[in-house]
Image 1: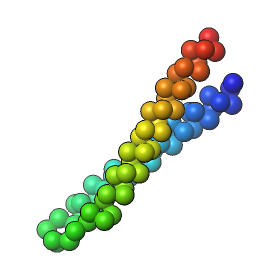
Image 2: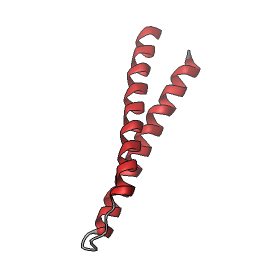
Image 3: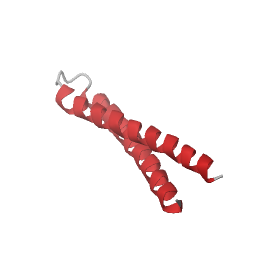
Length: 73
């Protein structure tokens, strides 16, 4: 049970970290590309998808961790 909670904590923090880093990368890319007239959709669209998926994984792990801790008590 403790190993499952540790795994869920890792997934939660990894998902949140990945989401934050990708959002920072997208913001930086948009800032650098402003005024150049370049189309950055090809780079930003997959990054947004990865951000969404890692956010969903983090939220899912948080819910599962909360349920496991509730059951443990």
